[in-house]
Length: 251
Image (cartoon, rainbow, N blue to C red; front, side, top):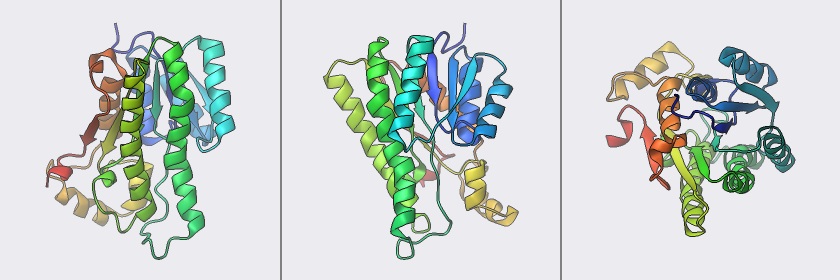
């Protein structure tokens, strides 16, 4: 039996990268996975790669109406929701100093990276609670612990996700909801977003040399961390930060 057998899990931003790897791993471990993304072709490709208990729904996580529709549809079709992975996010242009950041661009990044997580928790928690409890995993970043002068809005957004995760965790625990909430903090991972920050082989090699583990991470490295937090193996874990970065935060 798989580690998340018979669970229904929603994974946002699952059309590529970490989201895709997470959706595939959860499905391989027995979950029914609802894959969402604004990238319809990417989301459908993820479902095709899973080849089993998965379906795609187009979703802009910054839109409240999309969250209402997705959660209502899951409850109507599956009868429950057991896990939510708030993975959807954007980095924005790189490099991007706060002095040169437009207010429009700042708001766009925070609307997806922060408001999307807020809306996911706002609508996900009642669904999880009504299903007997469950787990939320919010994708933050190593940037939540560091100054990010070249990614000012992104760093601020991931710091907000880190803090908000703890707020949701304690709020749910105090109310007896049996809903856990934890954050995962990837380091430099070989994904389309990572490639936008490190666009050349030379840049990637320089970064690789800075990582104590001696290599950049793979999406699957993050997916296994998410799997643990969605599974019942982590039943006593809430409000925690799981850093998966090859040791960079320890320097």
